[in-house]
Amino acid sequence: MPGTSIGTEEAESYLLLREQGWGRGRASRVFQSEKALSPNHPAVLDRAFRVAVDRARAIFVGGADERLQGIGWVEALTGETGHPMVSLNQYCLEHRVNGICLTRYCIHLFREKAARAPAPHNSGSAPVWRVVVESG
Image (cartoon, rainbow, N blue to C red; front, side):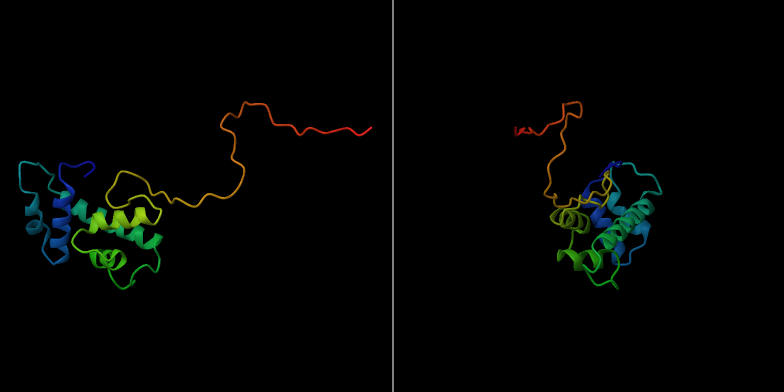
């Protein structure tokens, strides 16, 4: 995961345990290994996931039952269980939005291109002039 020494599997395990009602201290035992995390990292992870879900809810309005929260909303939206971060990012990509769940990137919405003449990449090029035929 960006900015950490943990992997997606560990982060998703932590989030799933939190969803089941485990406290931060108990759920954060999934991170106990050689990897050093700051003491506030579990709280940061909780907040980052909540922000990602809030952003997804704003983008995909009406995509899932609005009464649901967190992982429950992600599962209802994606139809996938057990991998909330991966399934949310995959859903985003399938719907023309870059992954938004715990990534380093800003949200980009990829719209369909409008049918119009493309702008030239060389703005210093000479303009194209219409040839006018003089009658005479």
